[in-house]
Amino acid sequence: MAASKIHRQDKPVIGINSDPSRSVGHLCLPVKFTDCIPEAVEKLMNGQFKWTQRQRIRVTLKGEQAYTPPVELHNQQLQYPEYRFIDCYQEQHNCQKGSVVTPDGCSNFVHKLPVMALNEVFIGESLSSRVSYYELSVDGSPKVKIKSSGLTVCTGTGSTSWSFNINKLTPQCVEQLLKIVNEETGSALPLEDSKLVERITTRFNNSLIFDPSETLLAYTIRDPVVFGTGFSSKPRGFAKRIEVKSRMFDACLVIDGGLSFLFNDGAVATLDILEDDALRTVTLLD
Image (tube, one colour):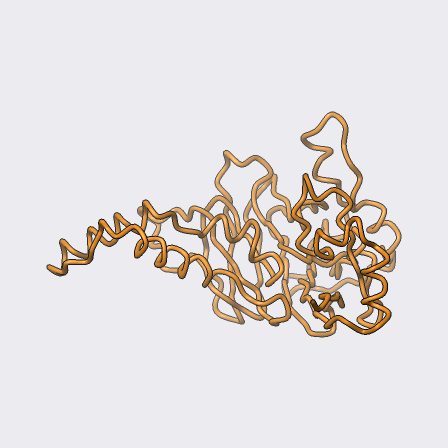
């Protein structure tokens, strides 16, 4: 929530993990400083840290509902909601609406959202049991129609979280793949070597994580429908710009698991990663 309030690179954000027993706190100072705040402050004042520029995703919505106020995602699921992002949105929301006229003469609103994603953006049907239908363009490529369980787009900061858990392999999967390789090629890879399986698993999973300062988007097409659809897109990859056009009727675009924007048929979302949008954070030096 604090990061959502910051739109300038000259204002750093320093996180304190107040409850390390319940939260890892990747964006906070190391856990040991939770009970040693004076030591952390002294290090900061003495310059014993390095700057980290965490890239964020800028989202621009286009469509008739581009200015429809978002809802806190927890309002849709919990009896006692937690309003983590609504206040930020209301503070930063610019009520001046810009409009464009499409070739068919229809007027659409264009809205650069005042809240950027530090971790990820999710696009898909509000009900997870429904198939999400949308058109996807990566770095200016022709739009491709896709059916899946939704689309996630993350930063380097978010690559250790949801995106990682969607794409990671388990030792069981790796062992089965190596067995198939042996059968198909006549190789004799030592499947009984659990350390080999573990090394391969770890190496692949680590390749899913990238530096928070990299100006890259990592996208994942969740559970793509491939049978009988002519699906030929890569289920995951990297990009600088992603454009998504909705073909759904009860869909949402969710920023950092908090703010949920309407994203129904005809709406277009453009996701950009720009250096000027980075969040300035610190890493204390030992």
